[in-house]
Image (cartoon, rainbow, N blue to C red):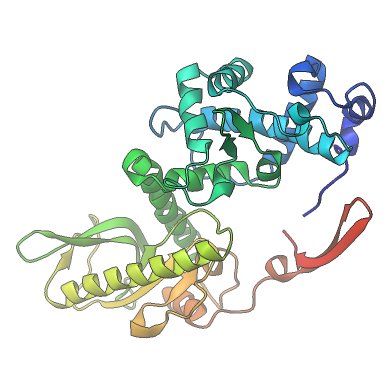
Length: 368
């Protein structure tokens, strides 16, 4: 959005120090008080970014909170390097600092008070390895030929720290599959809460299992809404993931949506052949209940339409933010099949102006 020439106005002391005694000073020589200002700046910026998993969640060897602490310390260092670059520094250990891995891990562990063996796992994940992660923007620690690691300010500073780290976890499902599973549960839980809030006279359930006639598992409904008055069940298969970043991830969503649609069709055919849902206690659902099927993403749509075969792909924002004509299941289905105009808060635009040196760029964007 912008590339400021220095810290925000609230960090006047840091700004003055950088332009004076702080010119060409490597991170190791930055006074503790100024380091804390950099860390406060990192927390301020990262605090506006979206997170996806509980900070207490142990994803295998470290918690998300511990990973966030390491990321914030790297972010503070990155801002130090980036601002020195903007001020014209050419000193290598300032603009492109590099450290032996053990030294960097030790420094990060001391600064964050995260156990050194846990910091080592986070650093390993953040180090460029194109065989494990083809997207270098998710791995901002670059190994040099002499074995040192260079934390790249140009890759750390603009990125969404926790979002990118979560994306890195998702690339290793064998090691971090629990993170992906919990993101899926977060999706079904969020959708169910939205339906309970917006629908009246409707039963809502999550993770309803469906069994074949021999009691083998055919699949499950991520979320289902049943209207007893019309005997209609609306099934949502939730394709929940972190926000997309770039065309490659849009294409990946397209592929996943196609796969999810094929999964829905198989389950729909199984029900038509006699498979039966295990409805929650207290639900009275006839065998000939009318089904409708949707795939829901959090807030994005595939690049190509996927409305054929009776399994439309829609965004959860239509359920959560758009104004329907009423509060019944029929009103919800109508809104999903014929999306109403988005509310002003989702469609209003604003002009933003970014300056970098003597260049200025003006961009019209959606208000956030």
